[in-house]
Length: 327
Image 1 (cartoon, one colour):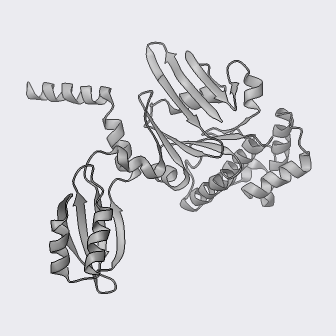
Image 2: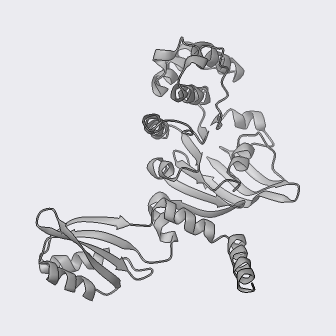
Image 3: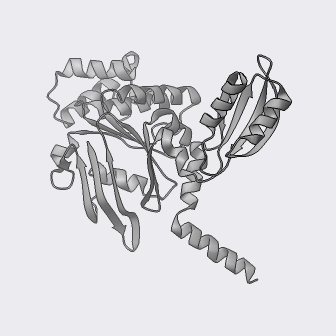
C-alpha cells in the first residue's frame, strides 16, 4: 500500500532523510518513531506531497506522489500535528467545506454522518469549532482526514496536549480505523506506539534503524533477558533448580506470591530464551507456574538502545571519551 524506496532529502548540507526504504502493507497500523530531528516529519511531508524529495520514490497504492500528486493525494487522509481547522466555522460547515475541497463524490449527507458517528462528534456537529475542547478539535481533525474514505491515513503526533482520558479515546479510535484503513502513526510517545501499532519503524539521524513487528522488537536488544516468575513449590528447592538450569546467569528470590507461591527474578545469558527450558523443569517437578512477566526490554529500552547504536552517536561518544581522557 505504501512504498518508500531509497528516499533522500537534503536541506543544504544537511541530510534530513538519508536513503531510507520501507513498505507498509494494506491494513497495517505502523508506528513511525524517532527522536526530535530524526527525519520523521520530513518523511511524512514527502509522503503526503508537502515536500519534494532530493532523490528516491514514495508511492501510495502504486501511485508516485511526485509524478502524480493529485491522484496519490486522493488516497491519503492526513492529520498534521496542528489540525488544519477553521475555528470560526461550525463542525458542519467545516466538514462540508473539506468535502467540497476534496471534490468527494460519495453521498454527502450519509458520508459525513458516518464519519461523525465513527469519530464520535455527532453531538457537537452544530457547534463552533473554537468553542470545542482540544480533544474534540482533534476528533474534528481526524474527521477531515477521513472524508473521501482514503485508503491511507497518516497521523502526526495525534495525542499531543490531550488529557489521559482523551489520549485513550484517540488511541482506541486509531485501532478502530485500522480495521478499514492502512495507518501510519508518527509519534515520539513510546507507550502510544506499543499500545496501538502492529509494526514499529524507528528512524534516527535520517536512517531507519529498526523495522520489526511489535512482538519481535525485543530481539533487537542483544543482552540478557529478565523475567519475574511466580511458582508454587518449596522455595529453597525451586531456587536451587532454577540456578541449575542451562542458560540462566542469575536467579534472585523476590518474595511470597499468591496461591502459596514464590516470586523469583530469572536472568538469561545473552541471546538465550529460557522459557521452554523453564517449562520442562517445572513440569518434571510438578510445580505449577502461576505467573511470568518480562522485565525490561520495553519499547523505551529498545528505542534508547537503537538510537545509541547510531554510528555518529558512537563516534561522538568515543571522541568525548578521548577528550576527557586527555585532560
